[in-house]
Image (cartoon, rainbow, N blue to C red; front, side, top):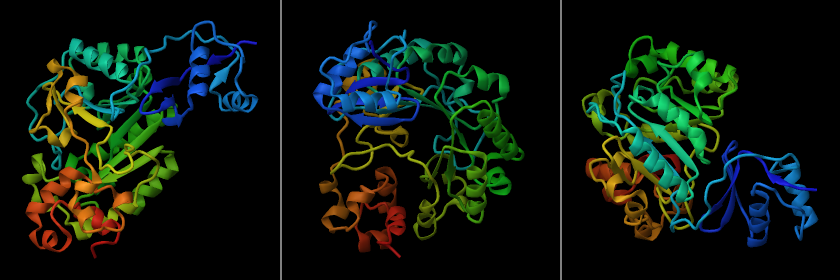
Length: 391
């Protein structure tokens, strides 16, 4: 009997040999023997059981990793990733947007976007680097001048594609044409709170898009930013998202960048905002590594071609796509927990917190002098509140 690696599963040589389930966004570490066996099964002719352990073979069949039906699908080249591996890429294909959200960190759009050729080159290299998840962002990515062509090429790549949208341009026809694995829509409150930052009528349009995507069988997630106008709406949001079947709900606090600097009334202090990290569900955070802070496996490509630690570092790029993604990634220094001030203060939750958002921490150090003197410069005070370190 011949066995074949099922569609939606790809092998990756990260720091250790791995199997990635694109559909469910799950990563399995393998020993070399298991990796080699599945590699042989991924070839066009499949493989026989050979020396594979019976238990391992049965588990692969029961989990749907292997099938006895021939699979005719292209497999990406497997080579060793950089160390640390670049697993998650924020991909800002355009900064054009059809909204002027009051809390947007991007600020005023400069009508920049990556050409289709540039998009292809970045995705080709990300695939070669053993990437796992492409986060397609903007602006509003659907406004990219060649979005249709961009969308049509996505099936050529064997990583997970997540499209971030405000939902306003989505309808049933467009949703049915998207070649993505997950759609994430921003919902920043119930109707009053959401419309307060995104504009009148935007909540109903965004929720309609959520429901239509779910009806189409798409995996759908939601991202919410905490602001002063939605603080009383989180319980209601949670009930709504669980009721309609949202896959993941990510809750975060915006950084004081972009338009939020103009609308200071939306700002929430750490003592208030930190408590809202208790909301949210699912496993949507980018995984890190023991002993390292946020961003160990994450980078961002911006609409102007800059490559940064993450999108917040747009004014401090590490390089550009002209230099090559792999080259620039090699120059981005991982954040060691031992180097953080909170580690030097012997914080009891640092291994769990991982220092919080490093960009937000850098802002807090300058803006919250009293907190910095007590808890240390470079602390993410919102996470300090969430973990009960700061009352």
